[in-house]
Structures are given as C-alpha cells and as structure tokens.
Image (cartoon, rainbow, N blue to C red; front, side, top):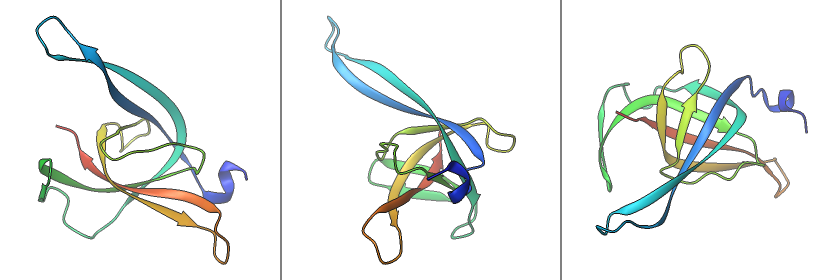
Length: 119
C-alpha cells in the first residue's frame, strides 16, 4: 500500500516517553523514542477548539485536531505527536485511538487518533 492511497500528506514525529529506572532520589528517569512518519492532520468540529476536557489524567485543552497514522506505526494513548507542517507545528498528546479496518476485511487500514494540545 502506498502512502498516497490513504492520503497521508503531512509529516509528524511520534515521541514515546518510557521510564527506564529511578535516580538516587527515587525520581523516575525517562528515555524518549522518536519515530518520524507520514500522517494526515484533520480538523474536526465535535467540540469547539479551546474547550476544556475533564479526562481521567486531568484537564486538557481540546485542539479540534485528529491525526491519521499508517497501520505500520505503533501508537499508544499519551504519546506525543509533533506536527512538522504549517498550521500543525506544535505538540499534541494522543487522547484516544480508533483503528479503522478495510470494508469487508479484518485488515487494518489506518489509525485515527484524537489529539489534545500539550501546554
């Protein structure tokens, strides 16, 4: 499957922050893994951008933005998506992930991720 068959016209970097241990004071020590990929940012109107969402992890600002990612990418909630294209050059946090499958097949087509603004 080519990138153009699902219209992934933007680029982004996915950042996964993983705990690798603790320092001498008991504070967690993190490492970041970065993966650059093609994607497609979409502005959706479910809520108004700037609305405050009360999530289980705390309050988040709704960005009104969703991103489509290819099926070859591993994505998790809480991961950071750093946009690289004009209009999306900021950091977002993945709030929810929806796998989208081909019609009449059980093969994964792409992921749609709802994003919140990282402040």
